[in-house]
Image 1 (cartoon, rainbow, N blue to C red):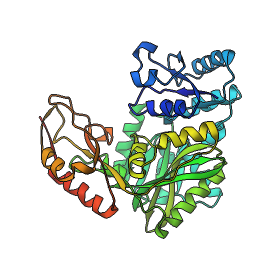
Image 2 (image 1 turned 90 degrees about the vertical axis):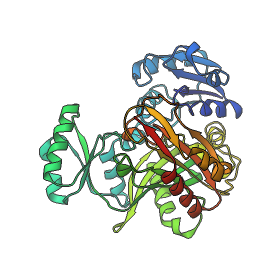
Image 3 (image 1 turned 180 degrees about the horizontal axis):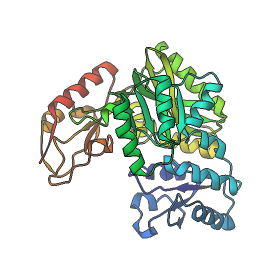
Image 4 (image 1 turned 120 degrees about the vertical axis):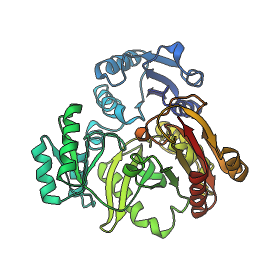
Length: 406
C-alpha cells in the first residue's frame, strides 16, 4: 500500500507517524518543505520516497507533488496530522481522487461557526455562536447573549489568538487589537463556565476503536494567560466508568453525524452549570505529542494503532488503562533567559520512577512567552496508576519546581 504522509519532520513527534506506517507494511512517501538532506535521521530511515515543496499549505504545490507521485505509483492514502494542513490536504486528496476525509468534513471541522451550526441542527448541545464580519456584528451578539463572550479566528487551533471580553470596554480594546492584526472575520461565542477537557478517538470503518478522555487544569484560556500557574493536561484511566458515559455518547454521536470512516479525532468539551457542551472537533490527533501520554499510560503503540487503521482498516491491540498520564508546564519566573532551576533533583528523588519524559532548557536559553503553549519552556510528563494521586503529584511539582529567569 502506498501512503503519502505530509510534514513528517516537525514537530519532533511527527516522525512516529511514518515510523508506524512503515512498520505496518506501507510504502511511505513523504512530502515536506526542507531539502531531503535536512530531514531528521529518524524520518529518513522510514520513508521510501520524498517530494520537497515550497509550502505544504500551497495547494497547487501540494497537488503537483502528489501528481508526480501518482505518475510513478498508485496512491492509496494521503494523510496529514497538523491542523493548518488539513484543509489543503483534503482539497488535494479530492482533486487526486484519493480516499479519505472529505473537503466538506474537513471544512466543518475547521470553521468554528459552521461546525457549531452543524452540531446544533443534529441535537448536540453547543454554546451560542456566530461568525462576525464587523465590530457591529460582535456588539449585536454581545447585546443578545450578554458577557463574557469569546472571540477567535474561525479556523484557530487551541487557544491561538483567543480573547475573552468581560464587558463593553474590554470588547472595544479587543476589537482594536483584532483590527490591527488584519483578521477579516472572527468566531464569536457565548462564554460557557465549567470544566474543560477533550475526547480523542481512533475511528476505523466508522466505529470508535480506541477512545481517551483528558482534562485541563485550569481551563486553557486561563492557563495561557497566567504566569504563576503551572498548567497540566491529564489523561484519565477511568474512561470506562459510568461518569463518562454521557461524554462518550456525545463524542460518538458527533463522529457518526460527521460520517467519518477512518480517522483520528480530537474533540474539546465543557461541563458546567448548563451541562455538557460540545466545543469543537478536529479530524486529526491532538497536538503537543499528546499521543505519547496515551502510549505510556496504556502500554500500546497508539501510532501503530493509527497506522494499522490507515493501511488495514482495523487494529489489533487493547488499551491496558493501567495508568493515568499527564504533562505539566513549568513557567519561567519572568521573560528573559533561563538562569537556573530549583527543586528538580528533589522531584526526581520523589517521583523519578513515574517520570516518562522531561525537558529543561539549558541555562542561557531565551524564555518563551506564557501563551506559547504547554511545551514552550520546561515541562515534565508522568504516569501513575491512580488519577487522584497523580493530580496531587502534579500539584506538588507545580509548587516545588521553579524555573528561574532573568
